[in-house]
Image (cartoon, rainbow, N blue to C red; front, side):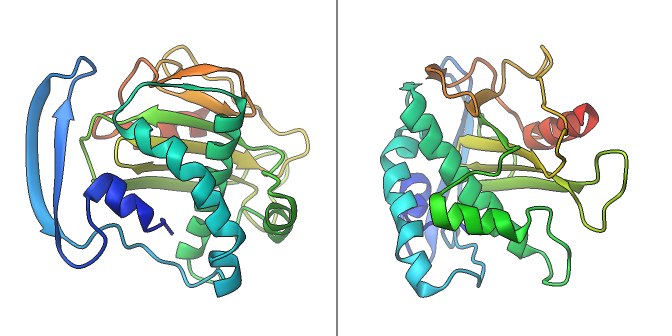
Length: 231
């Protein structure tokens, strides 16, 4: 579900019990509080990819993303078209794998042909919109997430045709909106959400990281609920 290299980036270790810690800071760098505990590092798995894929093209995506995503945990950065597209591709892989956390018999909002196109050409779902956000460290740590599958449009299909997936790795969060409706909604963020979400796809214009707003303890749930209302 999440690559092992994140263990070093966020947790500082790779196996067995390690000391986990987090520091809650303001945007100005003021420390509000910190705590630590022992647990196994990031270790969420899904038994879906074959060995050839997992150690082949999927590993290539990890190698491309690691030098971009790693410094975003603690540093400011400029994100241009190539970096945004690389991050969007990495987020797509995570969202696609997350569907397999559900029971096998449950219908999937992301259809099989989207997986095929992603495998064959690294093509993102055509209706996808992706944003990034900065967490202040509150809430579930180091991984947090919120997923919703929806029915949108005038007729109700036999399977969910829209999805919202928000997940965080350390201080960096991704918010993913997609659907399978030909003339379905394009989300235009309201003024209240714009300070918190930095668009990375399909908007690949140069942008500064992090965005002005920080997500707090209930930040991901709030973003997902707002996007549901917009849909």
